Length: 313
Image 1 (tube, rainbow, N blue to C red):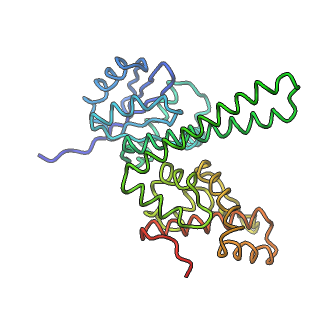
Image 2 (image 1 turned 90 degrees about the vertical axis):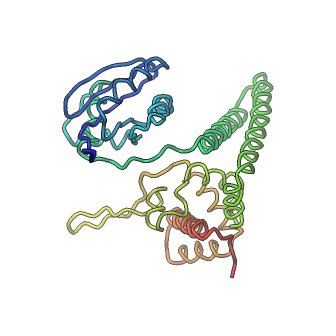
Image 3 (image 1 turned 180 degrees about the vertical axis):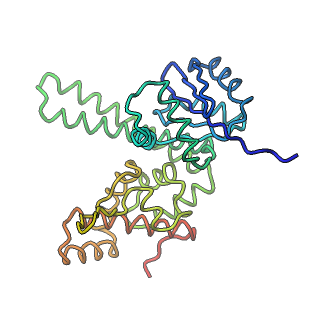
């Protein structure tokens, strides 16, 4: 017997302690505790309704226990960018914001837009992503403490210096853990080797690309640039021709790509010549640097598609 496609869409709004659920088009709603027992009850509520989609917002990790549990039940899940959902709410005239309203908006979004179901990242990739994020946080803390040290009173300096030493030890340990995790996987090891063959790409850039940009090598040059947020977007209306600007994308990737471009401009002849050509053409330094970021990303994308190391000739 042929299975009839479901027209049921379920939105789950997640907070630290609660899961608010809404069902479209029936309008049902329910609330559960964001705990092991509550997530079990959530699954029992969702499964009999045979949804076409179950939609969550990314909430900084509070959603992951529920998402992982429902994924194990083979339910069709989508984790959405909160800004995308909020823009949809405003476009439909829904300006008020509560957890129950957000759940209804998620269900309505699924019904109207029907985003594609994407499989969850494997556990090892989530570990790599978490280590990479923690590394970034520790670097930010070290930078903040070093900035405080410059203007700190003499009697406070020893405490700041001691904390910097501790943070640097933790950074070294995180780097070791990242390296071990990459070395355990033949595929990641090969990707790391390919990425670091490009002059300007170091271990931090390589591990960030592997963890936070798994699509590298599988998209076109335009798609990968738009995904990261280094593709210039038009801002035109009628006869008005505005300046093209980059917008959105993955900020963590752009941060390491920026540092990579600065290094490549000094040490990679191809990127250095490209940057200088743009500057001679009258491009502002920031514009030329952004163009270098995009060029590096496109080159790395091509290298990963071919699984081939960088060659100067």
